[in-house]
Image 1 (cartoon, rainbow, N blue to C red):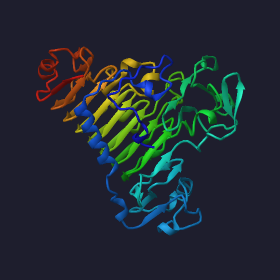
Image 2: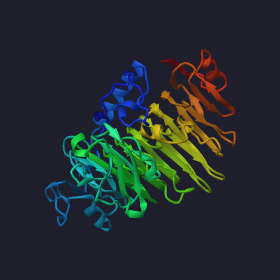
Image 3: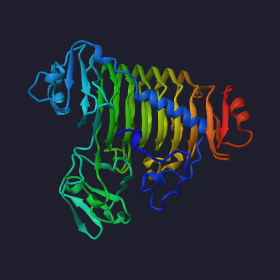
Image 4: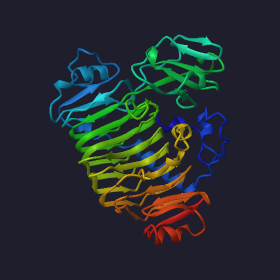
Length: 461
């Protein structure tokens, strides 16, 4: 599933639903977007979708297709493995220099645990291979009305359900923490006492209203723990309540041409009182060195599109986020935070297009709407940095801040030649000690003289 399924044009004004944006069309609250920015985003979107496969030219490939079999050797397209489950069972057979290739046009359900010195990409023709966290398509899965207007199904789930997506995004579930809160259409509750069974308020039987239902439970679709020398190219990740790609203590990781949609929304187990929701498209946690995210898209993300974060002896070193399209992220298009003794060194965010932060399902449903920003530094953090540069990006419209880039160590990122697009008197945000700034008639002067972005361009909508 990709942004193709999102039919509403960004210039269209759509009234927000009273009930927390039950329909995705209603998540766009009177947006009057910038036509020039629309064109730039569409051009980058095409580039990402058309990015050629390069990993399929390597030797020692393992092939996976929906027409494969679990007992094949996987060494040719004609002897492909059949599933991510088979890949996981045979993960110990992967050797340094191997490349795992998923067939384009196919959909694979489950997740991948990466292996150092192994690359992951696509082969064949058609759309990028899809990796869904949803166990199956649930439209005909034995739904029944457990009480008046409340529908459930016999299925139970391995973990907390973070989101329910109807017809590729025509409607989404609105997660509640107690069954008593399920009162409006699309409200749902996940019963942890009974195998994470779900209960959702609907006007009638699901099959009478929709053609597909994907149920996203808490799962990391692509996991890199302690990995070195891994490339991930041209894969499409959707429908999980957890992260798309989660990388911890990694080095030499490159993510290119990947698409992420409808990521996040589950409760983060073991954090605070257990009712904090989370989920990023790409997350680097703790150590990350010499790593790049380039030409990727993130669309409808509960938390953030791309993030690096950590504490203690954490180093984000030689990190580049470049030419990505990040839209409808609930918290930050790009989020970073560094605690005591952590530091980022030689970090660059450049030529990214970031749009409509806070307007998606995550932004509407999350309780801390004052945390939304295209660049979100979690201002209470130390955020010590050296040669941290944010340049040549487009920041277009946010329900709260365009940028929140603070540093208790007084080492904020350097801003260069960025384009800022916001409604008049909307929030510009906070930078260094210059806090709570607004997008008023003198905003260009403020950004030039106090935020030190002398090459900034300003556009009002």
